[in-house]
Every structure is written in structure tokens, then in C-alpha cells.
Image (cartoon, rainbow, N blue to C red):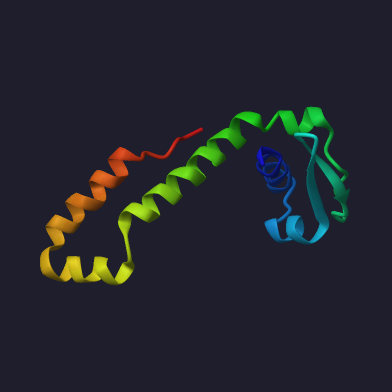
Length: 109
């Protein structure tokens, strides 16, 4: 849900936290359209569609980086296996991890 990221960025730009998001905002998707169903953030008015749209570019970067983190996490493997790999041959581990990072670079704004 891309609206989630736009709202998250709006909150952060206004010195609010993600915990306030989870406790005070409800997003829904009806008929293929995401919208804010409930907004109870103290001291911050509900954003207009134009305000949210101003975060589209940054939200796209966050969405893409989230997917990249998931891909990297899967490719890195279990931490116990990684520790064993480091113990046996740290240089081979470094090479493998770097190849995963190179294949899945994070975006920057």
C-alpha cells in the first residue's frame, strides 16, 4: 500500500513517530483505491491529497528499498550459518555479502 509510505513520510516531516501511525490512523483500500479512513493524530491535521502527493518520489524510494532489504535478508541466510562461514573463511564471507549488496543496491533520494 503506497499510501502507507506517503503518510509515514508526512508524519516524519511533522515530527511524529511511526507508533503514532499504528495507534491513530487507519488506512483502507476499497474498490482499488487507498484512503485514510480514520485520522486521530494529536496536533496534526489530516493531510490533503496534494500534501501526500508531494511525498510520492520519496515513498517510491522507500518502497523499493524495503523490497531490496527483503531480498538481501533472504540472500544473506541464517545468522548462525553466516557466523560459521565467517569462522571458516571471513574473506569468502565478505566477498559473498558484497556480491549480494552489489546485486541489490539501495536507492538514494
